[in-house]
Image (cartoon, rainbow, N blue to C red; front, side):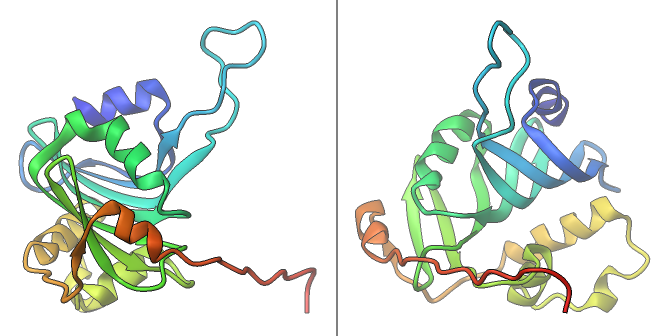
Length: 189
């Protein structure tokens, strides 16, 4: 099973949800997904330093050992091709990919390896809450659902999500990156 393989390889971190939905053979995951693994510690063949890059607060739907839905936050657009290269063999041809990116100034869509990645600017907040808002999912629709089925509900809503953003080349997308300035907060108020 794909998610068990990822777990064994250390690609799943900060796991919130990892189990089967109410549909047999359909699995949901929420947590951080490793994009760039940390280097091996001196003298070790298995012990790694912390990951260098993550798809933060990701949500996945896996069916027939293929990723059918991807959501999460990328700190920079330059991680998108790295992510695609790492996971392309596990991504279904009809995968729906909604990726928040911190350093883009406007929404756009980019096709890589046959998948259209719908890229959404991210300013602040919780990725899961932003996704629910983007897909017009009311909290009441999630009430009394299992954590896994909540991800499945988001996936079902994402199937009909059609942003009015242009499909651009990756090079054009790079031209729309911005410098992210984060405010520093220190101590209690």
